[in-house]
Length: 209
Ligand SMILES: [Zn+2]
Image (cartoon, helix red, strand yellow):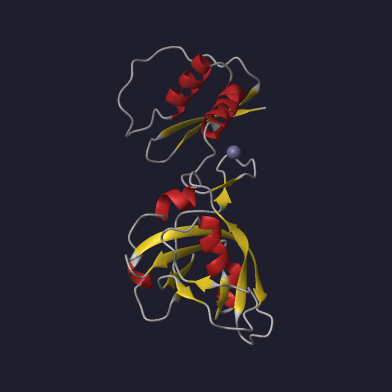
């Protein structure tokens, strides 16, 4: 996560400002779009910024995160060697990154003299655990996908009843709670492997065809 600490709103007095701004810094009474336009550049950003997906802005006056944006690109600031401008857009309020940070205290690691810092985060940007390829920002699954993934696996065994019997039979090892002996029916083609280890442990494995 890229993090930038903003001063309060000030008059921009740079006649060569590539963003052609009247003000920069955090305007408490300005809209998010206005604050984004006033503060997305130009910054000294290292190579790491290119690998970040999101940028948070804190206001130094309150030590709070005030804005979160998605980074689409980091571009050179025209006429400002070594300075960069962030291309992207502010996040909607229901975005997981916005919800995780905006309105909360500035991360401790960002309370330093340099306005530009980075920190590791567990929020944002990894694939859904079901394998569908969707990007998620919190948790392990797109909502509902854990149910789909589970039921697809149940269906490989048969009905839910079949699955429960199969599962209980599989888990009937030494550290499983004792269960009443009873018939186990699997109405599906497959291979049943029964192995008995030297220590007497019994393992039953059903592999659907
Ligand atoms: Zn998924």
